[in-house]
Length: 274
Image (cartoon, rainbow, N blue to C red):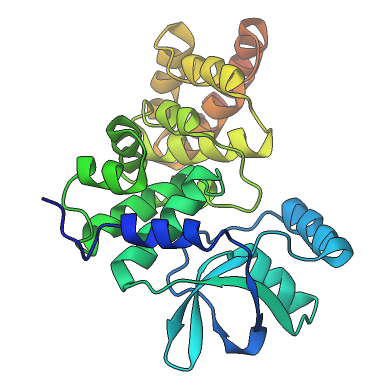
C-alpha cells in the first residue's frame, strides 16, 4: 500500500479540479523554489518566453502552495523569473494545499512531462526523490513521476560520469541527450571523456555524428597503437597533448588522421631527442 504522505494523486486531483483557471497573486508574496530542479535556463528560450509574456501575459498559471502568509512556488519557475524581470505586480496562480513530498513530486513530474529538464537535471531530480525518502527504489520513482523504470535507470546512470563531463553537460543551451551520455560512458579514459563531451557540445553534434566520433575515438587499430607507443617514448610530459590530439583526429577522415599522426610523431621525436 502506498504511503499517503508521498502519494501525489490527491494533489493532482485537486489541481485538475481547479481547472487551472488561476487567480491573481501579488508577486511579492511568492517564495521562489528551493533546490530548483531546473538550474539551466537557455538564453534563447527565456528570450522567447519574455517576449511572449510581455505581449500577451502569462497564459498558464503558476502552481503555488500556502506557506504561512505567503505562497511557495511549486511549478512555473521560468514564468516566475520572467514576471520578476518584467516587474509584474501580480501573476495568475493556482493555489494547492500540498505537503513537502507532494510538492516535490508535482514539481518534478511537471518538468519531466514538459521535457523542460536537461538529462542531468532529470537524473538529479530522480536521485533527490530517493535521497529524501519520497521513493525508495527506481521502480517507486517511476510510479510517482509516471515514467518507465528503464528511463529512471538510464538517467541515474548518467550521474556515474565524472564531474568534468557533468559540468559540460549542464552548460547553458547544452543539447546533449541521454544517448550522447550513453556514448560518453563507453569511453574509459576520464580525460578523453571530458574532451569528447566538450567537443560534442561545441560542435553541436547530432547523435548520429557523435556515434561515429566516439567509434573512431575508441578505435584500437594502427593509428591508436602507434600514437600510444610514441607518447610513451616521448614521456609523460606530452601525454596530455597526445590525448587532445586523439579527440581532434577522431572527427576527421582516415587519410587526414594518418597525415596528422605523422606530423605529431615527427614533433614528438624531436622533443624526445632533446
